[in-house]
Length: 354
Image 1 (cartoon, rainbow, N blue to C red):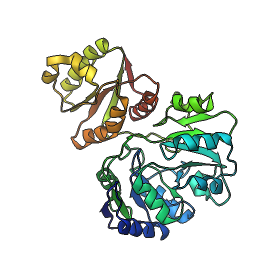
Image 2 (cartoon, rainbow, N blue to C red):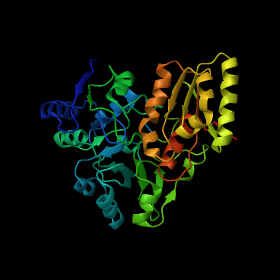
Image 3 (cartoon, rainbow, N blue to C red):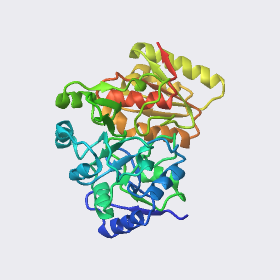
Image 4 (cartoon, rainbow, N blue to C red):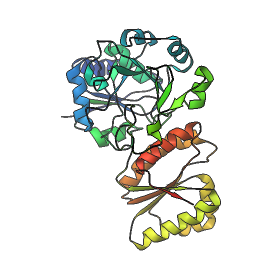
């Protein structure tokens, strides 16, 4: 299959290209498109056969549910069986944006979307190209991240092309995504709001609207499988081994030097993805380290900058042939909770405490 690669301006999406992409969706095809979080792989969310193609293209297990993307908040009432005051408050505050709501589903939603569950995940993305494509298609788009299953999510159209070129009908390229991490998934199908996946809307943000909000225990326990779309299996992992180093900067710095020395003696190609604070701690010695790939991710005081590039940097390490990546942990508060969730998954929970 030849994959069409269309460049579309986020400021003023080309209507003719959007129409062509929407036609592919209505014909049962797959189109990758940008959102403010990561690139999604879209199909007609009401067409079971089209939805099945998503799983085949990605190599995604069919028991891993998908998120339905909509362009009008009013569509929630068509897709969800129960929409209470909590939902309306959250829609008013956070949509369009990186918040996915899990609600009891209506019968029109195919079982292929929900993996047979009685709930459906719905969100309204905050990206002009995504909204234009959904509106023109005239259907909700079932859309997981547009990557091969298990790999770091794509934050550019080029990432999508590397993973899915020749496997899908088209890619809408609109530059790097903004947030860089997937949406927060909040389960509202029960009385107690439950975060199934942390993301761009933080727990603190949600508490300010709802009061008490809990976290799925499976997020912190690697022995459990969380219930959220995109979180049931090993995920976000580059081909390189990822090892996290946790501790105060003054302890992380010598440990990084020790780990680099050990891996170098074994002939491994090393990647360092470190914060500005840790690079500063390494000082002039940083230039002497036998490292194959290095990147300053930015300051811990600006986690949004780190989140924006972390997937891209994991992918860069693979492109450069890195075999082992050393990076850091973050306080699991605010956006740090989402960063840690993704990094722990990428590292298979390999954490060195110092």
